[in-house]
Length: 239
Image (cartoon, rainbow, N blue to C red; front, top):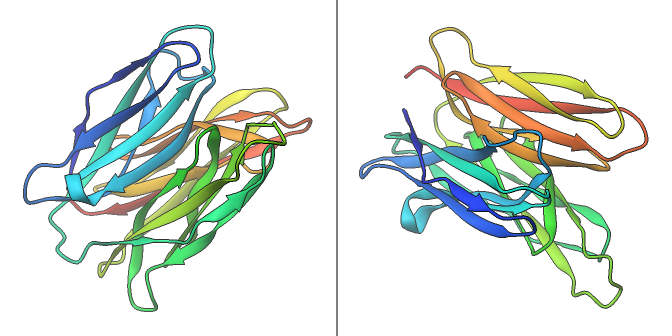
């Protein structure tokens, strides 16, 4: 199990870009994400954080909603586990200005989720990309085009499955209305992450979700009028 950084991308105010991180030959992505290291609390939002098996990489699409230049750093977790497969769920449509959750996607009754991802349409940003059980993954996104003439958008969830059962750990933090914060989930001593995710719930968006050396860190913005709980999850294994 290794982690590989990708080339950072620079986003100008109002700009969107694709950041990617590649696995070495002979390994497969199990998880990944990105963090905004120039300003972790900046309103940089994501509409995709997902594996790209054809190119053996993890890719992240990010939008810079701030007034300053921001730098997005992608990272991928790679494994030699030969049982790894990807399960892509169906699209869930989203009306302009609305949000929706994607149908959960599972690994079957005898296999285990070790990571997951999400893909959404233009101007549609991730609220949640996280586990529902040890065998399934789900996602939720908000469509921020409020024009009644805008086309439908979509969100879909992606589960990364293995024959090998991971250890699941979670962490959370309370965010007051209008604030930005961080939640972290740490692997047990001697273990490393295979994948992870996060969730903030209604009227919140994720600013980042990415592995650390021994866990998973999520940033979120609470756009609600009341407090919200930001959750981070990490799936762990022995190296």
